[in-house]
Each structure stands twice: as structure tokens, then as C-alpha cells.
Length: 378
Figure 1 (cartoon, rainbow, N blue to C red):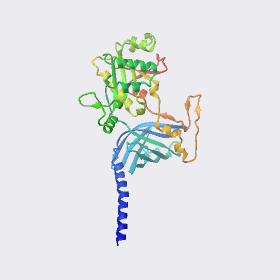
Figure 2: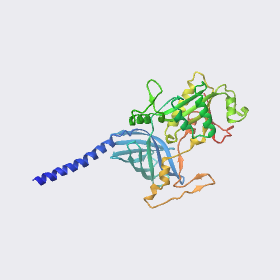
Figure 3: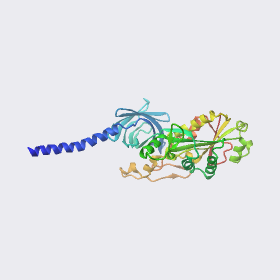
Figure 4: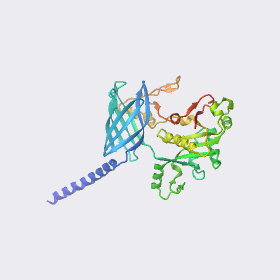
């Protein structure tokens, strides 16, 4: 009898040690705040090319189920997934009755609300079953504020240091002269990173920027720098004759020259570009001294399309399981890359956001290959 009780007690103890941690971990994943805005990348094929497509989706959560819609060009799909432990698995269906493409996906959930996994489905356009990597990263909650040169200089300098030497030198000079009335600097602050830093190190010295908010220098992820100029000043800046300017620029009395518009590359294509552009316009249009025109000098380096999935694909993680290897094939004539280990990346940067907000690309006097120049009448 004693032996039976002992065995029974051991079984109960073993069960509790196994079941309770399993249940707690499952409950922890089930309670994750996965709803909200997400930046996504997924691997696909288009016109015979291996591509990575970037987009932003809004995930809704009901209990253990997640829902979102994916859009690319003129096509849309509805996704539905169910949380099972640290996994999210489900299926997607086309929104159009004329589209027969459908499939399934399996994603691993991390505690920082990052999801990474694979999709597999039938392509309506190519009439084939294909697969690819799928990645989700939660879009950070940001706030925009005026720059304090005494307390934010380190991080802002780090953000703009990746630009050309000419641009970086000019912007550093502007930052030093920030207290002058013709220069303005706005910064984007990652509130999620600010909270995380504060929780991890409560004694960390933070920087107070107004009576209600506190930020840490490391949480600054983007900046916009502009100054009040005349067409003559701008002509000197881009080293061209003023007579080349279009009439609406030549006749402007006061121009807002945006010499820097950029973010930390880790946060590219997550919707922050849109907030920076709209915030800049709002600030310019509500200034006491009204501007006639705003001109943006956008460096090509800020238009580079990076992708998290590129690192994984270059290591052939998706294809190693099938024993296949793919070598890079560069098309040097067209200057593009067309291979499975070096895909074309589709996403949205500052150029698209400027165009979407009423800017026009100025081509006539854009002789500097490092810049794209945009203008908008205010």
C-alpha cells in the first residue's frame, strides 16, 4: 500500500512539474499583446524574379485568434491564425472571387511580439504551389518633438553620420547653431524603447524635455532638419545659377530647405517615414512666419531598401532542408539582381511619402547624384 501511495505521489508530482510550466507558458503566449500595427516582409516570386515584399498590416486579436489583411498592388488576402503555445498557424484566402490563390502559414511567436516563419500556397497568377519566409515586427509607438541640442546631440549626430560628408558637415553645423531662429530640428522618439529602457534600469538618468514627459537619449530614432532660406541661398547650396529655378521657386521670398530627413535604418519602412513627413508639413504650415515653398533634399542613401529576410535567404535557410543550393546571378547590364539568394526588394521609403503628400520631384536642376530634390508650394 505504501509503495502504491509512493508511486501515485511521484506521478502526481511529475505531472505537476510538467503540466503547470506548460500551462503557464501557454497562458503567457495567449496573453501576448499581438494586436496592433505591424511591419511585414514576405518572400515571393514575380515576373520570374525572386522578390521580397514589404508592407504594413493591422492585426486584430480575439481570444487566441488573429486576423489581418494583406495588400499588394491590386490583390488582397485575408489571414486568420490561431495561437497554439508559441506558434501561430492558420490560412489565408483571396478577397476577390476571381482569385483562386490560397494557402497556409506557420509562424513562431517571440516574446517581443516578433513573428517569423513560413507560408505555403497556390499562386493564381503562376498556377503553381510555392512557399516563402514570412516576418512580422511590431511598429513602434513614436512621438515627435523639438530637438534639445544640449541633451540629444549624441543620438541625433549618430543618426545623421551615415549621410554624405557634405550633408553631415552641414547638418552638424546647423545643430550647433540650433538656437538661431532660422533652424529647426524635430526628432522621432520611440516610446516603446523608452519604456523598455526605463523598466530595465529604473535608476538610469533620463532627460526631461517638458513637464509631463521623459525620454532617454537612446530612444531617438529619426530626425528632420530644416532652415529658412531664400532661393539665392539654395542656389548657392546646390551650386547652380538661380535663373535655372522654376518661376514658382524663383519668386518665393521664404523657402523651408529640408537638409536632412532620415531615420535609423533598423526602423525603415515601418510607417515612421509617413509620420515624419506629415509632422514636418504640419510644423511648417503652423509656423508664425509662413513659408512659401518647402524643398526637401533627400539623400539616396536613405532610399536604400534593406530587408531582414535577406540575411536568412542569403544563408539558404529555406532551401537547405530540401538539399538545394542557389548561387547569385548578377545582371551587370541592367544593374539589377535576379536570383533567389539576392531578391529584388519592394517597399516604401521617403520618396513615396513625399509624393503622397503633394510634393513634386524637381528634375531640372538636380545635378547632384547624391540627392533627390522635392518641392511643394505651401
